[in-house]
Structure formats: structure tokens, C-alpha cells
Length: 268
Image (tube, rainbow, N blue to C red; front, side):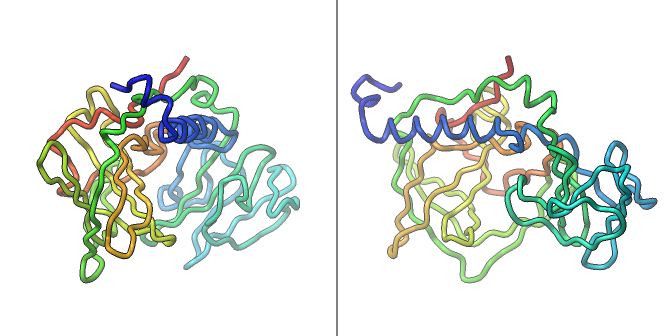
């Protein structure tokens, strides 16, 4: 439990700013709450996606979109009347190439399969959202850790939130100690050098969501890294059922309870 002194610390105020920023980002017009559908084109061979304008079809390593003026679609802010070839969108949702008014239609590719994601600021989930339930900052859960890279990258198959199994790339593990016992989490390394773990613990599915993400900073030259569970994140699928978040890989279900970080979404 946080004390008054802890709540006056710079670490607490930094965490509070982070937590408030998370709530704003989640509730943004094109944040995760606005996702109303992930439509795999293989499920719509005729090219028509229910409630999504235009005709969408796969063609090798691209998607071909055909639309008329009545569809009200724009590509790169220009009205689309005809056909255009599209690759996967890589940037933020609000910079996606295809839009219909405030809606953003994001082209997605996973393991050779193509999909269209529909982000709509008018989604019921966004308008019912109130806040993120999170445990107050506790310095006891900001732990010293060590990153142990693998000799080469590994890919494991894990179930995803949509029920399908996909590959999850792993580059090493972080080790840390809780109550004198060492624990490890298998992690990926992001392009900027920071780490990413998908984990569960003894609170998962009880006092917290069924699994969470952790994003430690890049390790230093000696492999030391701060493992701060105060910043454990709810995955996107905690905010919209249409995300395909990976479940924790083998070895990433901690036997201890981690009563820290984000716990659940709260609607009002």
C-alpha cells in the first residue's frame, strides 16, 4: 500500500502522469475503444465486408480497394472513385490512408493474411468508457532486473484473443526477484531496444484482466533493466474484442500475485 511519503515522490508523480496519459490515449477518437471490427479478407472472398464501404480483395502482397462516390471513401484525404492498391498501414490509426469521414479503415497483414480494421469514434465502447482501474503506485513493484538475450531469436506459437494461433517472436528473458525468489519473463525486443512481455500472474482473471503487457526500457550495456510492474498495461483486447492480442507464451505465467499496474477497464 502506498504511503503519503511515497505519494509525494517523483516516481509517484511520474507514474500518475503516465496513468493519466494512458486514460487519455485509450479514450482518444481513434484509440483502442474505437475498434468496431477486424475483418479478414479470406472470410469475404466476394470482397464485400458487412457495414464497410467499398470492394476489398487480396492480390499478392497488396490489397485492391474499389469504390465509387457513393461509398464516401477517401485515400490520402482525396475522394476515391475507382481502384487503388494498398499495402499494410504502419503508422498511427489516425494517419491510415483510407477514411470515411471520422472512420479510419486500416489495412492489416498477419502471417500472409490480410484484414481491414474499422475504427469508429462513435463506437459504443468508447462512449461507455469511464476510466482504467489501476493499483496506486508502489515502489516495491519497481524491481531491478537483468536481460538475458538468446543466442538467436525464437518464435513460439501461441493462441491469440481471436482463437487463432500465431507466431510470437522472442529475443531473450528478463530475470528479477520477488520475496527472495527469482522469476523470469520471456520478452521481445522492439526496434528502439525496449522490451515487451506478455504475462499473467496469480491475480489474472480475478482482480486483474486475464493477462497484461509489460514494456521495460532498453537494458543498459550490462543487461540491467528496470522491471516496473506499476506500469503493467491492459492489452488492447481489454478495450475492444476485435483485437488479436497474443496470450502469454509458455513460461510467462508467474506463480506470484502482482497487485500492481492496470487491472481492468471501467465503464460508466
